[in-house]
Image (cartoon, rainbow, N blue to C red):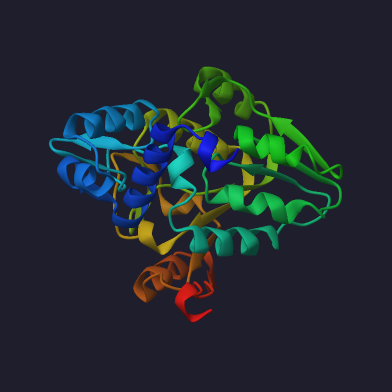
Length: 269
């Protein structure tokens, strides 16, 4: 679609989102001045973005930063900490052995593994993440198993009683999962529907591998997903605190620290 034929409001919504991805939060007044529109127009735009589940309004402004009680939509999450997620996903995919079954949760971190599975041989992949199902369907050598349930637009995945029942009906060699925050006591998430499903996934896997970018470390969310005794392996990026990595290894968890390539500076190209 050409720029001339695009909806001006949609362009502004996209621009507001790009601004928030860079700054994490902004006041409505600052956005009105930046985009040359009225304060009322900005509030309508923010209402629309909140309706779509990609931002959260607060008095006088808006935010997409992570909180302990609210998870932002997958459409936004997959663009946060992207270099770290890509590095973690590539490293995790290298551990997948031919002839095995794996389960992928609906996290945008684990989703970065999928493109690396294209050349896998005799692999069965189980997931409730709809974009992941669509991507895996293009790989003929991969047998894809969908975990059904009630579709959640914000998470782009199937949740609820149906998804729980589907998970309970399978057993897999390895689960790859992520979560929103983690500290010395365990893994956390903001939403109980996600917590119950991740907990069930942990129970049906022989090996549990956590992918965790360093921005999630040392923080808590409202619900405890599991303690560290539920995790066998952890893959973290090279900005993870050394004391955190050491603590996991002391618990007997195998930890792989992955280097994140520096982001190119366009001004130097």
